[in-house]
Image 1 (cartoon, rainbow, N blue to C red):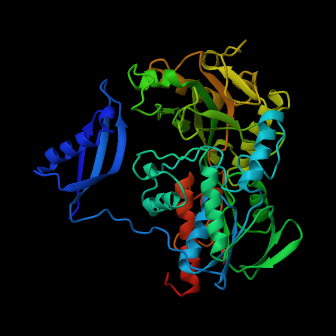
Image 2 (cartoon, one colour):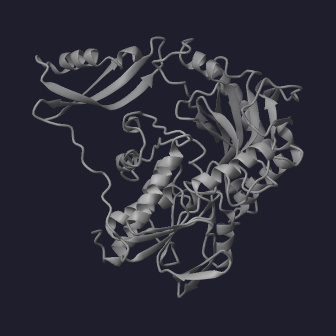
Image 3 (tube, rainbow, N blue to C red):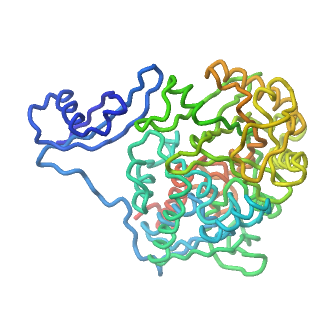
Amino acid sequence: MSQEVQFQILPEEATDDAFLKERIKTELHISNDDFTFEWKKRSIDARKKIIKLNCSFTVYSQEETPETGISFQPKNVKDCPPVAIIGAGPAGLFAALRCLEIGLKPILFERGKDVRERRRDLAILNKEGIVNAESNYCFGEGGAGTYSDGKLYTRSKKRGDVEKALQWFVEFGAEKDILVDAHPHIGTNKLPQIIVAMREKIIEQGGEVHFGSKLTDLNVENDQVKEIQLNGSEWFAFEYVILATGHSARDIFELLHRKGIQIRAKSFALGVRVEHTQDLIDRIQYHGRLNDDYIPPASYSLVTQVDGRGVYSFCMCPGGIIAPCATNQEEVVTNGWSPSKRNNPYSNSGIVVSISPEDFPGKENDPFVCLDFQKYIEHKAWEAAGKTQKVPAQRLLDFVQKKKSVDFPRSSYQPGIVSVEMDAIFPPFVVNRLRQAFSDFGKKMNGFLSNDAVVHAPESRTSSPVSIPRNPETYEHIQTKGLYPCAEGAGYAGGIISAAIDGMKCAEAIKEKISGGKLY
């Protein structure tokens, strides 16, 4: 019978299999070498000056072999009941893959382009500052995560089978390390080919994937979805529609509202993206230890309370790059990503303030109140940057001390930066909380509050500012049968893995409804 064992080691010991085997023998009181082992989990413990690695292993006797069960078992679904899936982000793709397993035919409609064509539009955005409203960092095959990092960490362990979602990524080409690392990460340079492999499998098994196919209308009769319209012209009959459109598909919220399908304002977070050198973050987090082959580039997670409101780090990218993530020309939006090796010389993270409908007295019941505020800030940033895709920026200490920056050390933001005081973009209830939070973070991380760090604005697409209410048991919209609001765009997930899990669950809910409560 296999056993599990946990202990701490030095990072440089982790690559020495002979050492690990002897340590396992000691921990489990094994007297011989008749066993094998494999990594189960690992994480860095840098709380003390001597950095340790938390290790967990599965140990097998000589007669046993590690389980290599197939995690993904698709069927040919060409003639199975059809399901329309709107959006080819992680929620839509994993919903489609789950459909292949349980006997539904996924027909996936994506407004944007495939990953190869999409890359060209991102190059134009970075070099020329021209935003393609249908093909950008948010819209296109793979969704926002494809070209903005591929982080797979989630706290949503209770929402579903995290391990299964990770195994599926491995099935389609990800490194097995994502099954082991405490904060798994694929990297923007590797994720696109994984997404392509998923698409090819969907088509191979009888599903369909259509690009340049934007949902523009719904036909609902007697509170039941009957048809969907694509690109303002063609209508297609569907009684089951998974709406996996992501947090930036504002036109979908407007469509639902126009059709009388209930939506609600939702709290979200908004702020700035701060960039330091990676060496500085390593020096702070690793007690001066730099350029080390045995430990990964350091990250951080920060949170504080200011005037009763949370301010926290979001989507921290070690060895990363700040990217332009607008979905329309007259707005500026930032986000961050890292390549698989996280070897860029800079690190960046969103530092954001919680925003709620109650921040706008008299408008709390307006479903668009938070979305309108998000759009207002993004447009102000565009105006402040000279009506370009350059980003308003300020040295960090200058920001805290309310000084306009006269020059900058550098920025990884390719379209360029413009010196702007953040007070010209954010209202006092946001900017004052950010200032206090940075002061608090400087006390927690000695050296963090530095004028060598640069603040970029805004970080505004942390999550959807609108929710689409659904029945928690059936996953259907609370008033519209056959409509399954899904993942980030509906307010039910945050990040690749939680979105993927939500997509799978929506597919399962449809199958259970069709088969009278039986999944298979």
